[in-house]
Length: 169
Image (cartoon, rainbow, N blue to C red; front, side, top):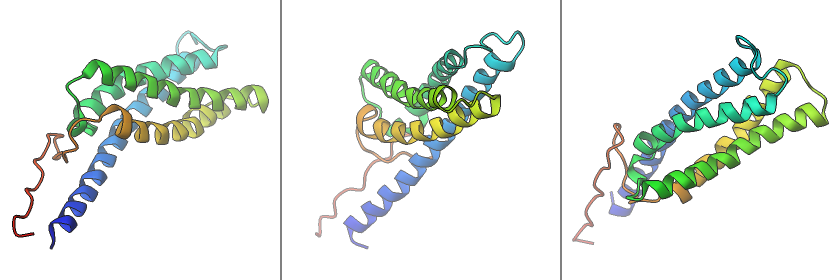
């Protein structure tokens, strides 16, 4: 197989692995987000029972911290740069936009459509909002945040050396 074809296949496989890792990190962060959101709204003491938007912002911040660790050191490990502070600032900004999508869908559900049940809150914030935010996050992480060397990563997230150019071509 020509080198270009091998590299495309490696890139495609690397991208699929990257998407799987991104999805795994996102799944774990999603569980953190939904758990914190519901604990604040419905849990012991119902700390923010009458403030669902505040509960969603707090839950998103906690989930963002968990996501930062997983994405930097595993999902996009091959794209880490030597400037982690820059990455963190961009990561937080991108997550702010992603969280805004969830808060906006919750606000529309609650205050425009008048849907105020816990089920409606969860569908708006944790299904629709998170889906929109996830798509935005992946694109921005890939093209704005983790912009280091574009080496494919192995299953443990360690960069793998690219194939050397074929000297006969």
